Length: 321
Image (cartoon, rainbow, N blue to C red; front, side, top):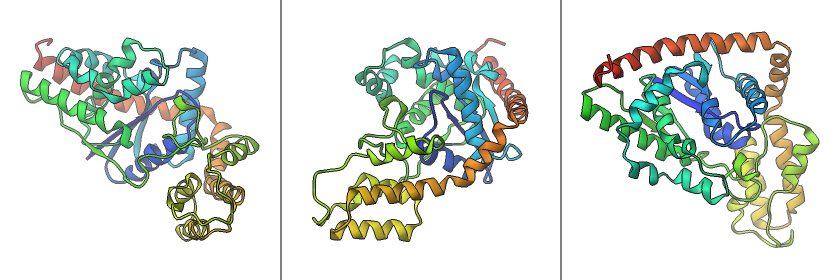
């Protein structure tokens, strides 16, 4: 079984990235042949600062390795170090119906949020399809919001296979319902685009302030909260606290008598403790950047060998070779 996933270097990684993609991917690296990439081509649809892209790419590498990605088990690389994916994007684009892309909710959502439209943003699902198909991926761990892109990949691969004969493996999405959608501090889905994130790593005072700013209602501490399970702090606490502790705070909130300030302070403490081992590991990696670069170079060499094989197969199938 080959597992494929990628993450954009478009800003500091946050709890939504970790629980929606990184943690499931790290767990899966022991269950198959894992290919994980830093999606720097994808970041070009919304990030236009070259130095920021370089910096974020390095930070993603540090974050992923610090959180437990094992380069001995997983192929870890920069997307742009495998340029074959761009040629495959063109091949796939020639069989992709416009209507399929027009129905993609990610493009509509980003435009609605004020992101300036461009061709790359619109054609994003075709590049994502190439990312998945070029490694003969069987399983793609994604957040709920990305499920449609895997479905689009399946449609595009099926269309190509129908036209030119069996060429691509049809992938399956893997979604963890309990953590597929992590709420941000405003109640919307946590996303860098929305500015509502809690970062995995960063300054303690800044992160504490963010958590203390999580949106709450106007009920007094004494009032019972029968909807305690819907409280944003409780939802986040269930991700980073021991289950029995999260349940205890939920029960206290439901019964009444627990102030929102105390709840958010407890959330910060659980969150800070949860990532303490990763913070120590990240500091070690930051002091040895040559090793990090070596991991990415070696991963790219392995990924490119497989990509070349699949691209050659696709070129032969459609008459380019």
